[in-house]
Length: 321
Length: 269
Image (tube, rainbow over all chains, first blue to last red; front, top):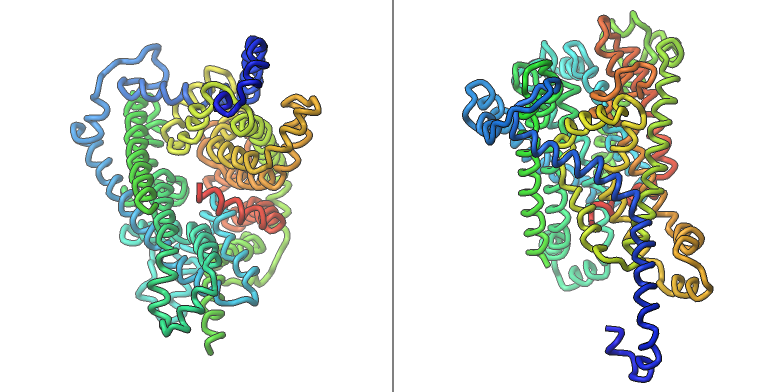
């Protein structure tokens, strides 16, 4: 590129110095490598090595202590998907719960965040304060908040008492919402929606604020009613944001199992088992059974699902352009 | 009426957002007996004793210092390692640059559960399992996709004339990076710092499978041990939870601007 734009004279001047120039470029490259070296080394050790290791282990049986692995080929994957009469149904149940939570959390989040952002955009007073309050569930996401939820969801906790106080005692759960097989998973889904509304709301709010008020004004001068303005001006701008929020929700729900681990640990009786939790239990809570291979295989199945989602993501985003 | 309805609906959701926190505060100010009396919100005998007790007798002060150490070094590590890398990706031409860059970004798709087990096995071999370094290094590496993307973009957004001018003055890459580009990227650095600090402060899973030695516990782990004791008492658990969330809430309120901009930017990428 540089050569084509340079004048012939300039090229003649530079010709004798080519050796020094390539040496200079080599030195620049070395500087570049020096700058990225810490990041790359850290990645090679903490990232690539662990990935390769777990990929290898997913084709073996190992209990973490014996000196060698027993290579078993695809057996771990087969066991997880259909072959093992005890494990496969458990995994299927966990996959079902995971899928259910993924869909419910994504759509629930959109359903609450969009009206919330629209309302927030329509007021001026208190907007900043309310936005800060709405954001608290995101910054505090973690064990402390989950314990607070457990506290209010106890058998004689605040939620049950509130329901009884307003005459909805029939909705109260005497065993508590997390110990009741009918309400455990829905309750966790509600809490996950509660936790993912903040970011979704923020994205919608940014989208709404990017809409030029002049366009909306012109449309209403042309006689477009509120519904038509929503359909033809606002909604098209919000579609890409909605896609992003749904995909983010699907991804986070599939990968995150912390809330399940802390609040129910899969209980009662497997009603809140999810894939991430299963992999975690197979990896860390089977003492001396050789389940580390199965745990790795399950980790890779989750990885595969995440990649699939990413591909769909890329497709959808490209479709919009 | 048209003004009141939105405000009312928003206030209702604000209450929903605050709901568990309100009860967290309520529980933390009750004593051991009152917490068993059931779910009244305002403590009848409000007491600071539970918080004081949790802070000192249950060693939450020590765990707080541990959390501070792990989070602080993680943030520092992320900023040092990835501002260097981001600068190279943005400003220095070297063979394989695009490939390495996309490799880092692709890491975004690796679920943490996939590498959790091999990570502990590796750390066990290296002898850092159960130490704070054993937490900080993977935490830093886990931030790579986000930090590389945001910092590379930030450095690219700085006019290249500055680089050319500095080079003409005889400054090397290191000096240009340190004296010119890093100060200009400060807003992005703060954003990444906050976006790293919050999840690190709250991290539980890797910490749980790594740490054994109680003197190294971070707040989330201390809280979990408190709750899984033989006679867990919700007033202490809520006091511990409050101690855990207050620092992040303060940090968030102080640096809200960076947070909001950063999150929108991060998701767009």
